[in-house]
Length: 353
Image 1 (cartoon, rainbow, N blue to C red):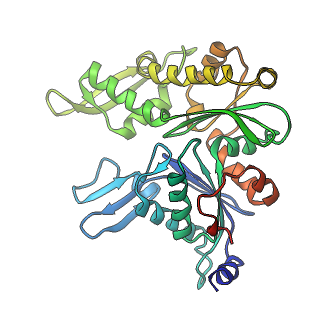
Image 2: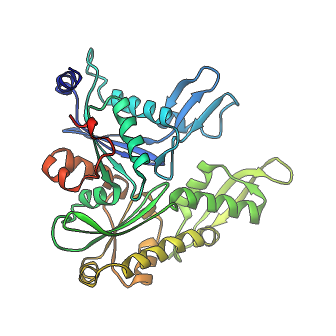
């Protein structure tokens, strides 16, 4: 009876593609495009266990809440760390998409992008959270594969395509051919680690404590992986660790670059290792067509040039790299035969009925 009701309610639901990221969650709706692009943050009142805000509104509360309100990120390194909060976040986004469908409980078909190399338990947590949030069918796709599809790479052909997806919690490196991943590497080093690098540098060299949001703004505005054509400077405000009072300093791009060097070098070294482990014929294709950079980390200034210099491979930053994964899920929603060929096996197949 339940599958029949799900299919009935599904007629009144919009199929969704979701990039469930550590930093941001993006939702694509069939025939409408990307309708949600909000931080993966949930604010909870610990006294009442009530969800106060989700997404952009919750992100505004980060670092500004009293003791009884916690603005937290329920995903860490690309996987669910708080199942209940993730479920409520997904439920909020699904209901927001279907807000005009009065009287009906939405039961959409959902395609979700997940990081490489997550365990079966972690995959099952994503499936269960999506199902509990209202999905009638759940499909999982690895994020670098989804990013390649979103960037319109010919992933089903016998040609090698290399994708480096630098998100908030993970960096996924994959060589793709014939609809599958041939060689890959997944790192728990990505955009959030770059923010932490800036916070550590400011603490060690300026005796100033920066907030996470401030560090991210520094990374976006003046952060770079290699020398810039023109120097950049930014005023940065934080708390003086000596006096405990507010303090403003000037940071330039050279200082931020120094802060980011270790993490950037880790990513570059792992890209080189992945290429070294790739079959020669596919390496030839990669050399000819280039390496594709996607995810928010792809926007770090001069990162493409640094990777190209280190590997000898042309590097292309995807058009709108932040949305590549969710655009890939959008393609798969409309082509179930394609989805069946590239999807990740489900830990619990009962969610697809």
